[in-house]
Image (cartoon, rainbow, N blue to C red; front, side, top):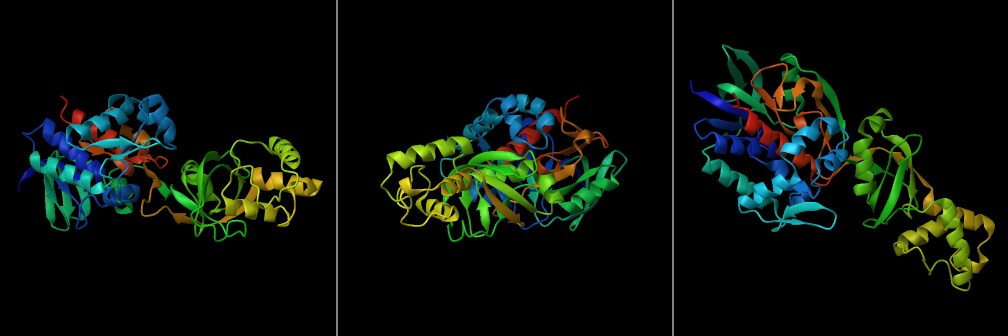
Length: 404
């Protein structure tokens, strides 16, 4: 039986990035990737709406770690070794042109995730990485300094094993048999299910806003997107990531406070309305929207404030003025349930970070066992940060796996 030098379990982003970098640095070593499914890199294909958001334009490790609700402390050292700029350089050296969008997200110029997939497959072949599909792992054990990996296609023996299987509960259970502690997984990136007349049939409307979870310290701001099922967009997804554990404990039934004017306080809003009552005195509130909110959203807000269609700004009474300021800056919505963010399912949970050496990404429990990507209890907000965690861990493994 062939003894494999490095067996990588999981044919996704982290798996390929690890394999390519090890094979390039150590051409004398045999590197094999096994994947349980029929295809490799399936999550890469659908990421970023099919465009693959490879990383983010945040080049200071001290700033970058603040995008990780779990893993913030542990990733500081690794990001000093391989950060977002290094990721850009890696892809561009291999013929993949990248672009930075206005919000900092980085994509291939082609706007196609296939560009990233083609790059990985080309580089893997170039460095003679052996990749095999339909290899579901059933058991992992160690004897005589070799790993025995039982798969649906037979037993493989390896000197070193790298696990890049993401949030796969079966692999987590196998790791528990090897002495690892698994933090139970809960969804991290999800949208809020809200049924409310104020946003009904406003599908597709997006506007900057500040959002708080009532009764907690959870707060964020950013574009808020109204959807069929409620609210999404970066502002909501940031809250879902930072509040993953808290919101799971609440069984996804809670209230949010939305400030449609972002950072404008209620008191400042009241002052602005008083000014508009003079400036726009004879104009209908319904048709004159001085806050530059999307038209249909503005009309729902004034309706919720009890303001009739023909009411002029000058005719707003004290109660209507107060209600309008409330609906603009302190609007309360009831959240009942969640929806997964597209197909990009990210979880909070995984291998306890205390059990991993972040100088090498090697297990502290088992020698010659390494981890990269979402199999660890590390996750980030949306924007390319989860991929960056995968690239960094994978690269450091390739640097350290054969250090003497």
